[in-house]
Image (cartoon, rainbow, N blue to C red; front, side):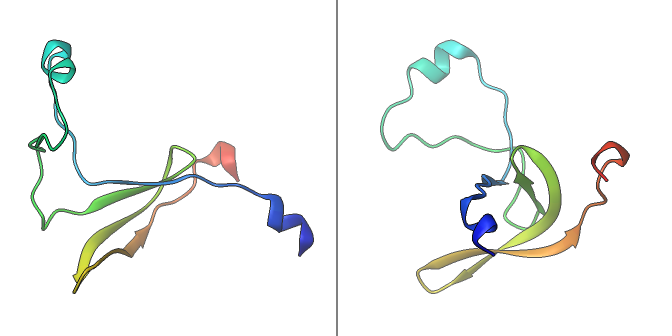
Length: 80
């Protein structure tokens, strides 16, 4: 088990995406709101080290926000 203590994995949850010209990005300030091309009911993508591994939904419980995994995605054939 000690070997697994040193393994590092970056987990990313993608809530949505949008396209924005770079001049607009450069003008963004603290507290800026960026509209995404998705709604709160849409599934989110879960990535491990930038590889899609699952889909899920956002769950809000009081002051806590979590992601519930709903579907595990099949691994690409070259990753098996």
